[in-house]
Image 1 (cartoon, rainbow over the protein chains, first blue to last red):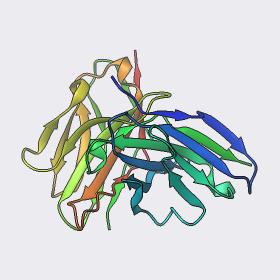
Image 2: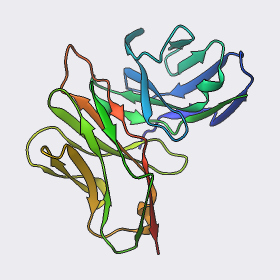
Image 3: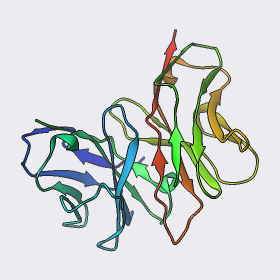
Image 4: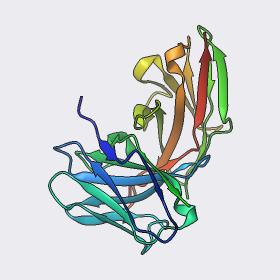
Length: 115
Length: 116
């Protein structure tokens, strides 16, 4: 069964540094998403992306965040200048149709720790 | 505004016993409700959903959930728990689509531990 993959599985960075989290969606999917979960808190929607554009974004997704599909297979989330509160598990998801989370396949997550 | 609450951080149950993982929600319109499971080092896996129709929804791995509009609840259930059911369970809700928005709200997750 095809899966969404994410790299790295864990990343530790210093506050103020830039990080790029990478995701490889399922190959025929066209809709891409990022979510995050701060430890002990709920999973939060960050952004959805389709046709090389952001479709929707939450209040969390401020100017420090950006997403890109640099090639035909990767989907990245960049945090320009990390803050302590960016420490979280970041989940990528992809889908072959527009819709809610029931249509999305999730990756295993990248655990980001900002020191 | 939409929200979801999973009041239990952890649920412990003996193998073979029935299990319930609780979820309550709040939406302004008609709710779309979901349950996901996350096994260690894996992504969230869709278990089941309620959109309309029968209040009792059956999903993967023998799980089911009951939609209760008056109590605004969508508890996850299984008649006989397996040790392999031990995982993190997430409830999610979104309002019926408005202007093409599909943004869901997830709960914090409940850790289910099934003891042999």
